Length: 302
Image 1 (spheres, helix red, strand yellow):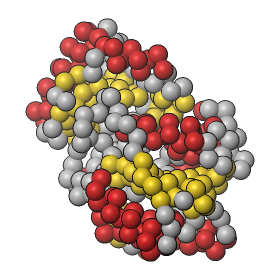
Image 2 (image 1 turned 135 degrees about the vertical axis):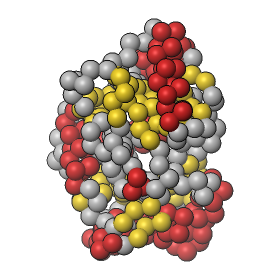
Image 3 (image 1 turned 180 degrees about the vertical axis):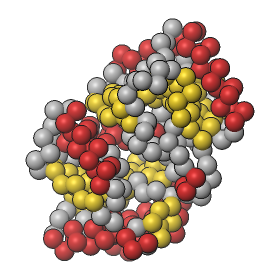
Image 4 (image 1 turned 180 degrees about the horizontal axis):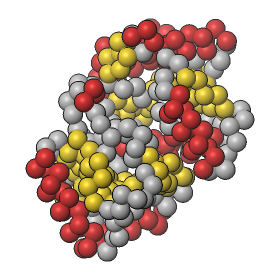
C-alpha cells in the first residue's frame, strides 16, 4: 500500500473516536497518526526525508492540522533502538499526550523510548476482547496494559505481567485516564516464564489470555528469549491457566512465524495438554496492507 489513506477512512476514524492509526505504508517506511502528531518510522534516510515532505503535502490535501512530526529509525537489532526524534514542530510542547481508540484513552510518551506507548496493529484484537467481556484476563508481556484496560472497561479482573515496572506504571496511568480504579487488578513486574508456574500453583484460571511476546529479549538472570524457538513453550504454560471455553490470543511480529506456523504451534500445544480448540482471526485492519503488522491467531478452547 504505497499510498496515503483516503479522506473517507480518515473521517471514519475520527467519527468512531480513533486518533491512533496508520496513514501510509511502503516497503521502506510507514507513517502513523498519534493524535495531532505524526510518527514516521523509516529504514533509510532517503525514506525519512521523502516522507517528511510527503506528510505535509498529504496534510494539506486531507485538511489535517499536524502539530508535530517525529521520526524513528527502524534498526535490525533491538540494541540499536532509539527514541523518536522531533523533525518538525514546537520543541516546547510536552512529549506526553493522549490518543483515543474507539473512545478509549491511552497515554503516549515520545520520550519514553523506542515505542511511544500503543501498538496500533492490535486495534481489532483489543476491540474483540472488549466485545467478549471476559471475567478474568491474563495479559503477558503487557507493556502499557492496553488489553487489560479494555477488559477492565467490560468489568473484568485482570493480571498484567511485564518485566518493566515503568511500563506497568504507564498501564496504571491508562486506567486512571479512563476513570478506572486499579482495585481488583494485579500488575506484576517479573519474567512471564517465572510468573506463569506461580499462577498455576495458586490455582488461578483465566477465560482470556494474551500472549504477545517480543521477538527477542532478555529475562530474569539474563535468560534469553527467542520467540520462534520458545512460543510453543509459552503457549503450553499458558494453557495450564486457561479455563474451559477460554480464548487465547497468540501474536508475534517475528517475520519467521506466519499464520501457518502459529496454527501448527497451537495444534501441537493442544495435543500436548489433550484439549480441543478452534481458531479465529479478526478481519484485516483497513489502514494496514496485507502482510503488515502483527501476525495474530485466536485460539478458543473447548
